[in-house]
Length: 358
Image 1 (cartoon, one colour):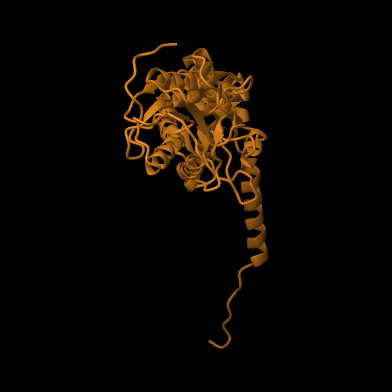
Image 2 (cartoon, rainbow, N blue to C red):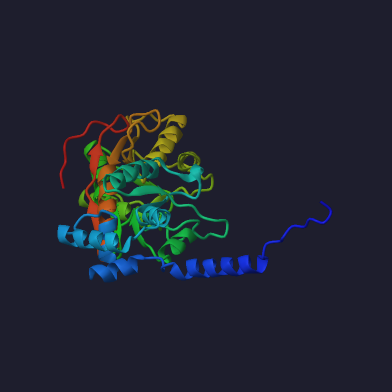
């Protein structure tokens, strides 16, 4: 009807009632319960509560019960996403190898593979550390391990200036956290093996003579040479111009053979150098091992296409010791090192020998 009209609702009243309801809901909300509240309620430290909630070992049943009672009383709801991210960082170990895939040595890769297994057995995850273009670490880990990283490498300083604990695999040190092979023992065993096979003009081949590991192995060479009263030669440092140890060794020794180098035995810093030495000698017309005996270092089974005599490093032992010492250091702060013995494996690049012991 034309005269009909509708009564509009009193919106001012509705709006007022809505505001009152909202204010009551907001005032009734309780503060978010955190792990600090749980710790205070249970009368325990935050660290104890965290260990109990994460199901870690060495938490007594009495402590665990206290924590769970407080959790139920306070209706505590942990932030599982944050906890998972924290746990991933807490149990993540960064490993530093070469600068890129092209500079990874067979030895470093074998150690890395063994490190992954050793840490996995202990509930940790070892992965390659990533660096940004500016040289800084891309991600942070609970601890780091470097494999054969030289102090001249800029990443070395980045690692040791980080807030995480760092363990170095490669060379013995007077302090800090490290694991190494007994490189002086290895240099001695290799040289003594050549001496007992009849070699008398023995040279030590390395990449850089000032490299500390090279010096340790060269000192072992010196010990064996001097014991027998043989001629001592300065190390032959082949450098790293080509970026491939085998190729650098091949080129350097080819030039030296052409210049008149006389030798019947080579003690090489690594298996990669030994393969380059064998190739250079063969191309020069020398027979291995009749004219020249060559022994490497690392003992990587199946490396190259020759049955190489070598000083074998205990790769699994190095990895297991590194995992043990790093985890202990992260828990206790104790820094210590460990040196592992090496052994000799005779292949077809040296003449038959008799057993020796030192």
